[in-house]
Amino acid sequence: MLEELAKARHKRTDTFHVVVIPRLMAPRWRRLFHKVSDLFFPLILAMLSGPLTCMNHSLWESFFHLFVTDLGASNERQLWWKWAGNCVKCAKKVTSLQGVFCANFSSSRGDWPRRNAWHWDCYTCLGNNRFPMSVLYDEAGDEWEKQGKRAERLNSGIPGVHAVIPFQCELCWIRNLEGCDLDKVKHCQYEECIHRANLDAMNARARGTIDQHVAFINKAVENAEAINRTPFFKERGPFPLGDPVGMGLAVDLLLKSIFAAGRIGQFIQFDTMRKGRSTFAVTWSSSPAGIMDGACFNSTRSRIQFTHCPSESTWFKDFLLGAQDRMGYDTMNQKDLPILAVVAMIKQIEENATASEDINEVNRLIKTAALITILTAASLRGHEGFYLDIAGTRKYIDKGKHGKIPDGALKKKLFTEEEAANLPEVCICLVGKFKGETGERHHSIFLSNTTCSGLEPRKWVEKLLEVCAVEGRTSGSVFNESDGSAPISAEYNALVRQYVGTMMESGDYDLDPNTSLIRYGISRTFRKTSETRARRAGIPREQVETVNRWKKIECAQGKRPQFAMVDHYANARELSTLTWKYSYAL
Image 1 (cartoon, rainbow, N blue to C red):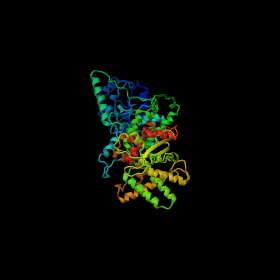
Image 2: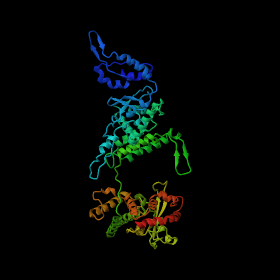
Image 3: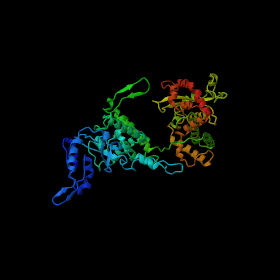
Image 4: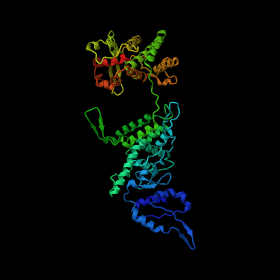
């Protein structure tokens, strides 16, 4: 009966209803009764000398008078900062800016009336253990003392938060996304995900900031009432049916964070979860709705596009920030090595190659030592080292072989033309696709023949070319196998970790023996080693970024994809002193 009443009071706003519920049935109907009632009170009946008599009969007159003259019809505009209702969880009274109210609280949408509100601390996460949340530990390995308060903050609402974000309750979102009412059994996990997404969007903003907004609203309302004026705040609802903010995508991402297996821990990382956003954007842009979005191009490289894609909404960005705060980061990034440890590793590999009688093993060790040297000296990522081209490198191998290091080379900001033309250097020519680029391109990088720490780039480049000659290869990557097949990163990683483990056991290079060997490899270890060494050597930050960021080299004419290798060599000459000084300081 009360369910029908909830619909009827919105369909026929010019009528009123009186509902009497026996005390015996009060526990069954009290919550819904509180939700659909504008005014309610208990009736105490007693048996006197005669028939049943209402002990508070004097209330009837005031009840009808109040209902008809003060509250008015139910379609009358209700100011959202004056909303008041009963909490869904505890059924106690809650006012607008002291709780969390659905934007559709005072308005019906079609045949769906609803009046959902919570106390801020009653709007808590459903299924706390289901959604990943990072746990912080101190240096002793104990849980951070404020971890409990952090979890409480991330798993509860904020007073008045519906005034600053477009908040809708789970029931309204089910109606928006599915076009039907909430089925507690069928939509249980669905409801939990929507609830979690709402909490993440709330917690994207600092509570102090939201408190300041709410305080300003309270003060503005107070001041406006003092002069009999209506505050100029927009209505909070109702929202139209549909999903303009990306709640559906947020649910998909949260489901991925629940069901996908993590590589580092039990759950996937935030960066893995958020990749679904780009997939959604691509499918949107190729849909009938997406192709209608306009685009504007300016004279620079950037592009401005006007779009209605929900993944670009402010609410969705808030959701991502809140999810990032909740999930945190638990990375297994590769670590750097002390530069002396790298030099010692290369020396040990060379000794093993000299002692080996297996030509295949010798070639494998030479390639490994050369790869480590080039990655470190040129500050390359692992796969970029495999782009070293046989023909281009061989063509310029003799240039700079007998150069001279200028006096005070590291202290000089500018070399003379004569000094720059006679630097002891080796040119490595790379062909491939680098990060941030479109298509495969040529690059020429000039490295010092030897570095301050003892790395020897020229020596190992020459050894690589000798190996290629023995294998009968004149084109392709110098690191290709003897049959011309592409190199396998896993084999190089395994060999690097073998030598790192040996150095850990020796205890000579201050390497933490408790660090997993998986934290070392060709992908990032030697690039990070190069960056760390360059900063310690006093190389200016701008120069480090020029060497490490291909985009800046491109702007300095380090490449021209439509040119021949000889033209790339000529253009790279302009940057040769920068890359030479960088590698020499290592």
